[in-house]
Length: 155
Image (cartoon, rainbow, N blue to C red; front, top):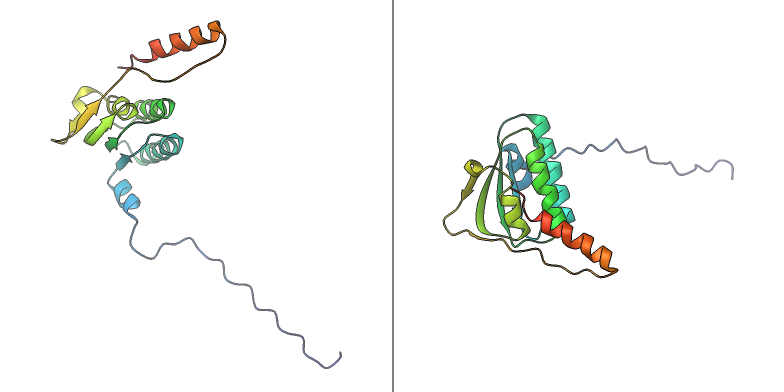
């Protein structure tokens, strides 16, 4: 009807910025000190997180990177992803074992030269032969067996 005011539409909200006003998160603080933590199960999510952190730190500078590892192991291919990325980045990487580095965790631990491996006093290590299952045609099983037998030697 004429004469009645239409409700006003509120003005658009100012663009919100992704600025963090509070204290830095623990991960942000660790990355500022060029430190990466690998704690827990090695899986695709962990491999992606560590890859992103290594590439980011390598892009920032060539200063050394420290990795603390405490892992019971997990997915072998995810472990190899982290292993390869540690060797791929230009900065020197030092690894400190703490607690438990087993299976794929131990594989990651040996990604750096011996002089860049450190261990806290009560750290335990365990490396084992690959474990898994395969089925299919005999030729497929043979191919898989050759892959695993050749994949054990990494140093």
